[in-house]
Length: 206
Image (cartoon, rainbow, N blue to C red):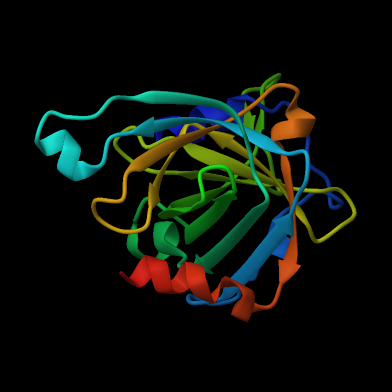
């Protein structure tokens, strides 16, 4: 939860009905799903490539910085769980995110949870209605924030050192971070049919 708190502090905007995120994220019942995606040119993320699990176990491999890696596609699948209220869990919803990095020739995935988020740094209080999702992986796995683009049903994603995998066990691990300027490393995702997120759901089941 430390990441979520830090991410909340990063934004001082005050939400209103035009930026509230709950209306564009189905949450009427546990199991409600949504899918968002976007295809891009001229977008990039800074990445860190770690040795595969097998290499790490053998004391082999090196950590490699991959700055300004092009990103051609990002997809986000999210399932509402109401976990914090219903079961005193950490998350309000589960997420799976997929990033296509063409120079790596890799499909990168991450799966964990999100909370409704919004923080006014001037008053140091929670903002209602919430205007973004704070999504993170426990145990120092980083995360991302998703804010509603004002007046639309689309989301704007920024990555904060999010730990990703290429495929399942042994495929290697990557960390993704937003580059500067933010326009290059911020991703607009538009609502998409659930079928478009089928590869994400399949990966999360593995």
